[in-house]
Length: 214
Image (cartoon, rainbow, N blue to C red; front, side):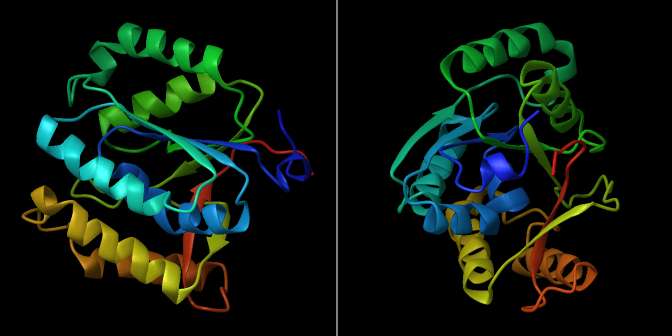
């Protein structure tokens, strides 16, 4: 596996999301920080399920989030939403294609104990495919519940937090009818995790990191 020292200046970062807003919800503020802190890094942004309308929203959002990146590759696939465990072979084949195309220094993916079946499948296949990489599993607040006790925190500023939330609310208009998809939800998550890691700004995003070498 890759050590934390190896990733002091990552050159390649892979972002994995089951649905069009997952990356932004799970690690949006962190992505904004990485883009600014590592201007030479390449970002691969891969979404596995979408409709044409939601794909437009996702492209707009990723353009904003990665606007300062040196280089990027945004891919939006159309694997059937809600069926990932049952079409796992097809998704695994696509993961193998990704593996052949890249060797990321950092990977952000879903949490392996997420209560959403699509999320869990991608987490499992991330570990199954990228077996010698540093992987951070992010969290998604939702109706199903499933929030746990993460062991890795990345503090963020109010500026990054505001940009993350504004981007979510302005880009993903199709989701604003969901009762949990609100600016208050996303702000609460950032504040709660900020408290847990004693962030100087009071804000943070949280992750699960199974293995790393110091």
